[in-house]
Amino acid sequence: TLLAAEALVICPSNPVVSVGPILAVPGMADLLRGLRVPRVAVSPIVGGQAVSGPAGRLMRALGYEESVHGVAAFYRGLVDGLVVDEADAGERARLEASGLRVLVTTTIMRSDGDRLALARAVLDFARALGTRR
Image (cartoon, rainbow, N blue to C red; front, side):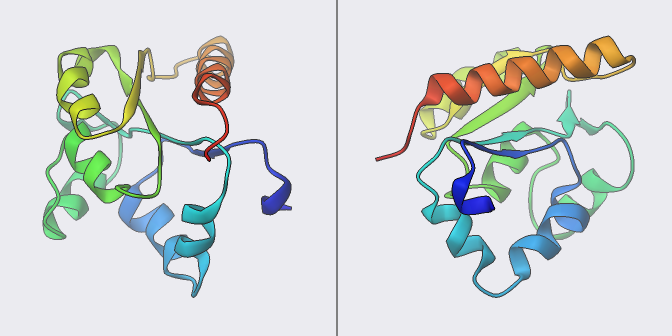
């Protein structure tokens, strides 16, 4: 079950269309905020643009910036760490100043090897964040 999880990882999905409905389930956002495990999101925005689909347009429609900062704002209070692509490495200090821990790595996945490398990096990052107190 979710309560037995060692970490919460929100994959690089459209925050509005894919994750938003999950967070809208009554009690879900509070449950996730209350988990005492590392909570990490992988940004679906790279270099100021959505990797695919309407994520950027929908985020802008809700008043969020189409950037890793918009993703951070969307997940504010829900995640402890944000994984961003190397294209956004220059944003790390500003993200960390907002209280997030940040992992900069390659997030664009073109092969199974890329997928595996990203999964390992994200899980190692979550472990490094440790348990929330």
